[in-house]
Picture 1: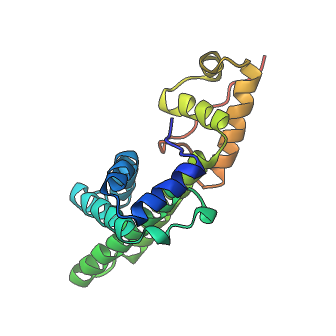
Picture 2: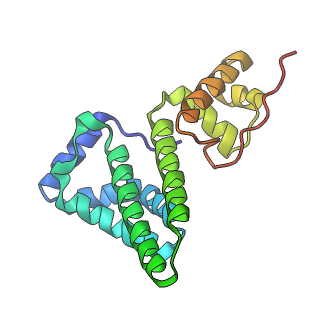
Length: 192
């Protein structure tokens, strides 16, 4: 399951960061570093560049804790937006440099930026959806469970598991993403 923190945790973390508590930055890093790095890597397809974006994002958070507005969403979503913005900025810089050397490439850049935006929106939707829907989707896609196995794992009826998966997929479809891991969703099973 994703690490979806309650709003109280977000506000306390912001206050601790504003006081300059290094331990708060460490805790924030432990919680979100893998999200930041994987999102940056997805956009840039480069470990070294993703490492750099990760450092830049956490540096920004450390220097600007008041830039976070709890009314605009969770700290996780704020960190994800910062990451997306920084990774896209770095990608555009890389593409501009490559275009200056070789010419062309703007269409490929925009396609990569659009894919990154869809991935960021899908991540936000998944982490914002109600926990029962998120749990069903994570079982179905990350652990490759069908609706019967999902129902058994969650201790709900098969109809309820199908309902949760259907609602979760409908929410996820609003991001333009086919699935959590980028693979096409499984074919729906027919009711008998």
